[in-house]
Length: 82
Image (tube, rainbow, N blue to C red; front, side):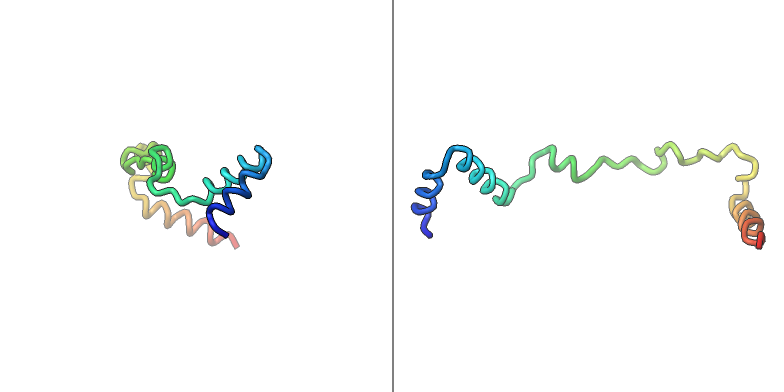
């Protein structure tokens, strides 16, 4: 089918159907350059880890002065409950 034949067939359609065809063409057309909002949606701004609120939230707890020992004791307690 040639472009002219396609144009004639689209022109013969009711107005609503023509809009639908144009919307379909727009949806199928590859986007060459994403718009600014699309770029922003793809790449959220990253917060540096040291600025995250949860980092350091247990720093003042006495049992966390040696976190490896604390984890070891929790594992021993929880895993020996048989």
